[in-house]
Length: 328
Image (cartoon, rainbow, N blue to C red; front, top):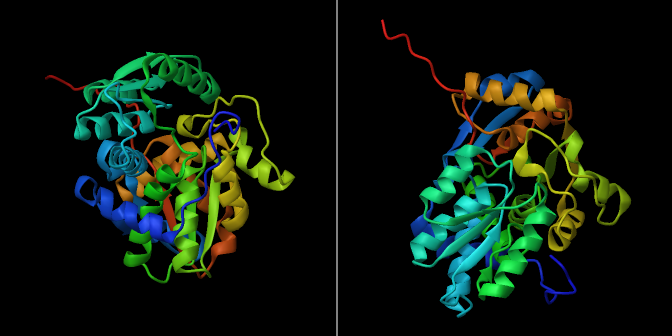
């Protein structure tokens, strides 16, 4: 979010997250929280997986997108020109579906190297796709240009209180299903998910610890927290395409400073191994970004021995290799 263009916004609190839950309840799934004994045994913990890969559109993003669009409609901020957003894929799908639910037009600016499964889904939900560059900054600048030309309402991917509040509804579900959760590990891209989950968790269970999980090659949040200010990194080529932010958002960094216990970084091979282990052990298909929380637990889990740990599986929109069948 560019503070020179947008007026200052405040982080949402628990009441805004609870309101978001009521607002979006009719349109989303309450996703299951699965226990995974084999992961727990690695480090002597009790491990649970919050399966947002089973959410509508295949990721948690529908929560924030719906809350933002419904709130914008309630306050008269969606004009006939519809909405526009910028996304590596999952937020774009969510905005496309939310726009279809509301009956408004949607444009999604995507990277030129977007995963095919994500682009096909965006188009399938009825939105127009505009390819642009490979970084989040490329997409944001193009979206703002198109919005200025058309008058469409921008729905940002993470750095907005309505988005953060929507994502925070995950914390409410986790703590209802597992009131004694000690640790929640959340993948970090732009920071909307970790912000909402951290605010919701710390409001309801202050003693719980919330950790971010980032690819070591895309560790802008970890570096920013270490520096005490937002740090900008070079564009990353991590396989976790949903986590390729180059700097945290203004609001999301503020939330991280207030509420996070730390950020756990993992290597590319660890992400791939976690993705495979989730499929083999939990029978759940997640995309690389969605596996980063589990990768962080597996790599750093010795510190969580004896704890009740929740890893958020943030998305399941994985490109699959062609399946081959023997026709004999």
